[in-house]
Image (tube, rainbow, N blue to C red; front, top):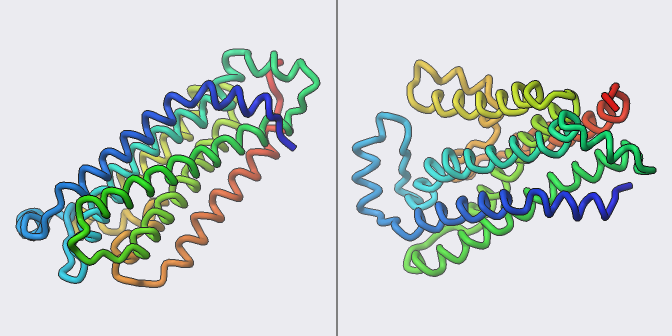
Length: 261
């Protein structure tokens, strides 16, 4: 099914970037939790509310703040960088550089290679968001123990962000499996996730741009709806389905395509 040797080698090759992005994302979340002050956030919301960048809620200003900042911008952008670069490096870059030809000259099957790389991509995201979640919980207990925070909603936000990155990684991994040239892989594998991020961000800034959200996968992770207690099961299911379908498609495409071996 998968190769332990390839998996270990993949960890060694990507661990530095994984640790850096995980730490940077965790530090940003901890910093936002640490500096939160209800009166300051209310003032900021009054000042920037019209821009769409900051939305505050009288029911839960803390979750509203991190929902419209960390979960919409920083917590999304940094993992996207990791996903795009790692997915490209797992398959397309190796084919482009010729190292994949060396690997497949051994008794290792194509199907084993692609499954192992897909397993690493998914487990690395689980690791990343597990650490970020723990960092968030620690920061909340350390810096905001005096306010009432719905931790269930916080966990839902983290799950939604993970599912968004799972779906996004499916796009990047599929592109990496489809193309033999790294530059072509990045056009699709990086172009779509970045476009989705920008379209979603633009749709929140003005009512005239609101329809742009229908062209972005990021719309399926709506932090405001989660905080308001809306039913988001369909959105979460769609994100999971996108990731699963694209990973399965990647296995088939890579196993059947022509490789410059």
